[in-house]
Amino acid sequence: MHKMKDNINSDKRVTLSELDLPGDLKDLTINQCSHLCKEIRDILISTVSRTGGHLASNLGVVELTMALHRNFDSPEDKIIWDVGHQSYTHKILTGRAERFSTLRQENGISGFPKPSESEHDSFISGHSSTSVSVACGIAEAMKLQGKDNYAVAVIGDGAMTGGMFYEAMNNCGRGGRNNLIVILNDNDMSISKSVGSLAGYLTSLRNTEKYVNTKRVIHKGLDKIPFVGTSIEKGIKDVKNTVKSNLLEKSTMFEDMGFTYLGPVNGHDLSELDEIMHVAKSYHKPVLIHVKTVKGKGYIPAEQNPGEYHGISKFDIATGNPEVSADNSYSTVFGRELVGLAEKDDRICAITAAMKYGTGLQYFYRAFPERFYDVGIAEQHAVTFAGGLASMGMIPVFAVYSTFLQRAYDQLVHDISIGGLHMVLGIDRAGVVGEDGETHQGLLDVPMLTTIPNTVIYSPSCYEELKMCMKKAVYANKGIAAVRYPRGAENASFNQSYLSTEYIFIRENHSDTLIITYGRLYDEAYKAQSILSADGIKCDILKLTKIYPLSHDLNEELCGYKRIVFFEESMGEGSISEKLGERLAECAYSGDYSRVTADSYVKQASVRSCLEALGLTCDKMSEYIRKRVMCNGEA
Image (tube, rainbow, N blue to C red; front, top):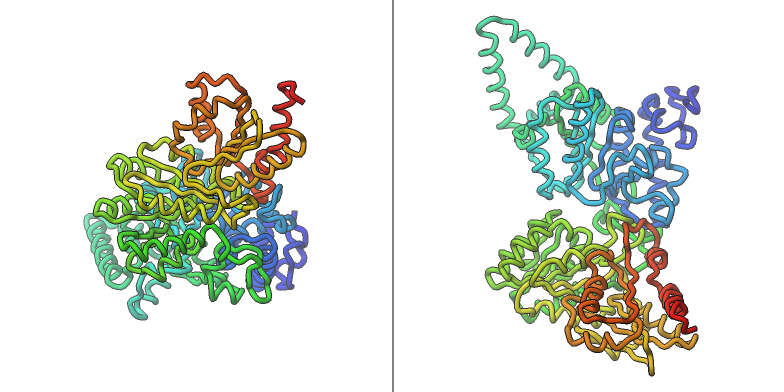
């Protein structure tokens, strides 16, 4: 039901709140939609300035998203976003405008597509380079089910650096006739070259419906001519391909994969976008539309510095300045310390998978550009590439977010561990990351890495310990040496006189209860110890720094405690606390051993709120231990 049918097609300015979205978009004029694009940009800038999030990429796809919903029928037509953080406008245009202020907040709108949130979110997508595979599967399912709807994958040029994109393109383009459309959002790198004005003219001609219809008429006509029709058609095709190969080199890679190439087209011109999408729909076979956009479009600070506004914390709209300085974080401490180590050792190399600034490696890049490698969104390649470096005596350091490291498990096993090669993993965003939600929480790196032989894992509790662990990791003799650390700044109220790369006991007199933890949770345990002490409950703390493999020297001492509680910022299955439980069982430990971990995916909320929900804050720790003591009749 339209909210305001009278104003549609009148060119009278309308607002989002007056429309029944996304359906009404099809009836609006280009001018009306242009005004809506301005309103959407204002909403994006205003909201992200308060909540943080991915700004530049979303500002760049406002018109593209508008055109998608003008030309396709969501949710019957499926739109798959890659990476999903560019779907903010899509959310606004599919019934979530009124709730958009809750973006990335607890119980609010997710920063990524989420089918449980809306029927218009076709597929969850927090990692890159997956959309074409998804869309191909959806298109084939539609064909098998007798549906005539479209599957549309929107993928950024950065995601093209991921090998999965090419695997999918190579497979999907050979799949015959289906309604698969891939939209390449080219907002940064040049993937093609133009050859003069003739190439531009031929490109624009091929993007019109008239061209497509004429081509079909000629094809059908030649088929009817006996004997010579097929030969003539083959001759025309050969001439066309020769011209295209010489003048339109940009199209051949995709067309060799079986896709019809359309573009490039101005991604901020709604008329051009409408026309090219209309043409693409008429093919009913795999089509790739090449769209050129400007990252950060409409907000000067983001246009001038799209990298800084890719993922940003809260910021001041007038100046563009973030509220929190990025200089104060584990990532930047890691990056600067790596530079210091590399100044003394020219074997050290740094690798990133398109996250130079996110992982603090910008300092290394500036100091040693010849030893710095940005491999693009290709974590698998990054690890095997590191293996090649290591085989020649270099010391590769791969800084990567915990959630993205998951993509390189096979390479860690086959290309590093089995051969006994040495590399360092700087695992950023380890543990809870908060507002980015399920796809980005770093809760699986520990269970994953502990399955790989020849692996050592460090989890420092503060900046100084991070530096100590980095030195140990870099100069390990062989295997994988991982140093994992959380997002953001340190929170270390504990006494930093007692630091170690192995483990430390913090004891109270005559305690029969032991708290075990590691990483930033040590500060929470330190506070919980004080809270419990005030209640007359004495607790010791075992702070692990090298969390895997665990030292066997601990066995006898652990068995002397009546009660052991392990608090761990990790999934419980395969965790360090699970492995310790197995060891205690082997030692015939007769006391009360329990552990508090994550047992499922963690939804978006602030880091503090996530930790509280998991029972990993000082108050929750002390409450849990108090209950364990009371259960044993000691209170």
